[in-house]
Image 1: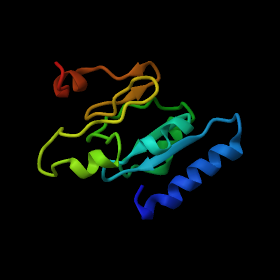
Image 2 (image 1 turned 90 degrees about the vertical axis):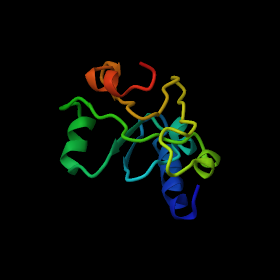
Image 3 (image 1 turned 90 degrees about the horizontal axis):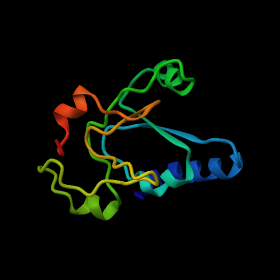
Length: 128
């Protein structure tokens, strides 16, 4: 974890400890890939956004709106992957894999029924 993110990680881990058996959801505002392996196993859900209004996030969290977004980037498995990645080569990193065997790769997303598989994922999938 980079020093500027250490306090964010600590806040997530402290929140999880204080919440005991209550669910913990992390909302990430992303502009670049993030190493979620450092906290993913400790939380119940991760909601990613790229600059939407807070109301949109709350509508997803309350179940008013079904999530439908897909990752526009790969999420690295660890910092070594980040350091070894070529900045000018697409799809060249080892992606994070969660406890449910979901791979946080380009085009990955979940909705209420599970992994999103639709025309978008069919078109952009690297494993067609």
